[in-house]
Length: 255
Image 1 (spheres, rainbow, N blue to C red):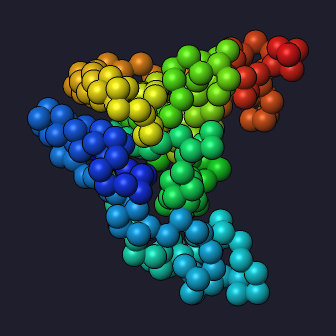
Image 2: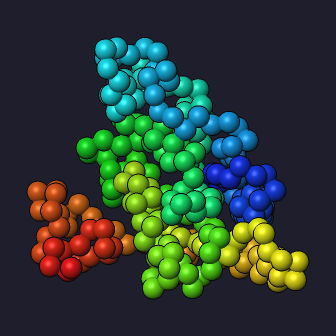
């Protein structure tokens, strides 16, 4: 089996980078082949734009979906996108490792989705959700926050972190992944006073051990539930009898 760890943090000595390296070692210990991609170190361009598609279907205006599909059909996708597509398709497990910035993933990771989840090869109207091209594979969000677990709870001042991650999890589900419950480490920030730094470092060491213990059993990791296509009337509106799994997709009378 093969794993892909995608790191989105600009500091190579960060705790996120540490988790990426340690996670890769754990998975290799469990006999997986592991590819680690550091988006910042590789200078990945997160901007989907016309200059990535010099051979155009519509030269007069740029339609990202149309040009992605056209480039894919003519084997003209940019080299970096082709390489990432190869790694993504080869992986049985994909881990996105990143810090939560302004209540979302860093822009470079969002740009990775914009450019690498190519319309045509990675999804279309027939291949998405439970019928997506990545069905049978698993994806995990491994996330750090600067605020405490209490602040990132459903009643915390920072808001429900898991809920903030739902759109990203849904994007992975859209292309067929079984999405694992996100792994979150809170209180990861610098600037602590000297007397608190040791306690912080000990807490992060414990968090690393806990993560690796969970990762060793990744096949038993809980999966996030989503509605399947049959739960929607005409493929659009949630049926009255369908179960809801998130406030993002709910019955109108649920409030």
